[in-house]
Length: 78
Image (cartoon, rainbow, N blue to C red):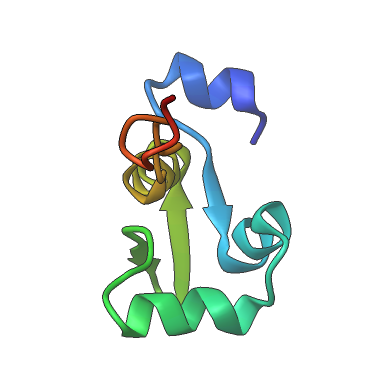
């Protein structure tokens, strides 16, 4: 099923664990480990497989974002 048709049905694309790992540049086991620790993205079990909504992955990544420390906070102002 293509992405345009999914969008027409009101559905968003989903990633497999392998696709998510490839996108993040990590091993598949890292994704399973993050989920087991409760630190991974929300997943949906479809039979024996896990799928990840693209929006859930984006939200998870946004929550992981670490802001750049400001100069004032680091004592770097002169």
